[in-house]
Amino acid sequence: MSTLRNVTFALAALITVTGLSACNTVEGAGKDIKAGGAAIEREADKANK
Image 1 (spheres, rainbow, N blue to C red):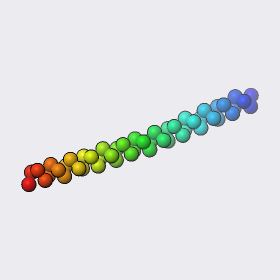
Image 2: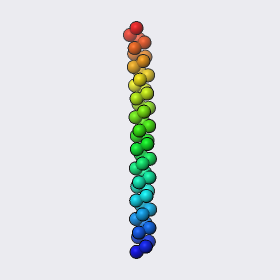
Image 3: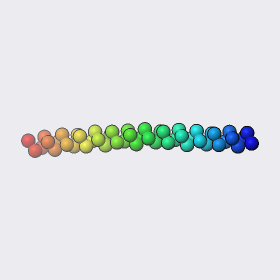
């Protein structure tokens, strides 16, 4: 029974770590997209002047 408990714990830890790293990746991608949008907006403002 102890082996099953260890496997379950290892699987839960792996899922948790994967989930946390995915959140950081999505957050980083959101920041990159936001920065890209700001750059496009600045260039559009320059073109309209």
